[in-house]
Length: 195
Image 1 (cartoon, rainbow, N blue to C red):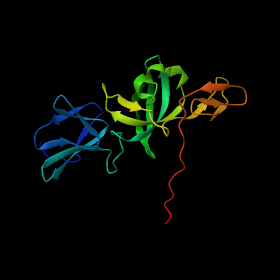
Image 2: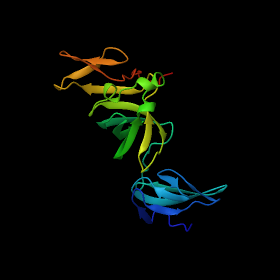
Image 3: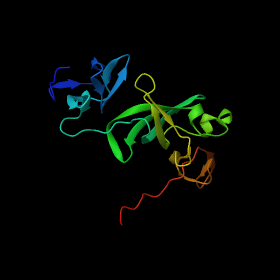
């Protein structure tokens, strides 16, 4: 690939180049059918490595964080159907995304026990804020997410009347007027950085 560091501008989903033995996908990109595509809008840079070159996409001078397998992400639930919840990923770790990206939590990835009894509407509702782990890019630039694990699930929610819900158990949240079912996350306090 010709080096045009910072001079080639791309948009999400744009094909950048073909993957070869010495050209690999880096930050801000993904591979599909032997091609490297941009996962965000920005500038294409080619970084030489010992084994060849790595193609990256960054936002101008400052890079951006994008979800990758294993990342913990903060999402807003957009819609829920019997098989999955569609979400908008708004943060990766503690870093807010410049442009939110979409993701899905499939029924089989909600929890790691009694998977066959999961009812999506009893786990998530539209506008809930959830913590999830990224499993993979999935299909159609839609990240596949999981809330299996005690620290993953709903962290902020409101009842149908608009009152804030607080966790009552692992499967319920309540406000002053009602109790609603959710897949509740066990929110852990931030780790202390003092010695």
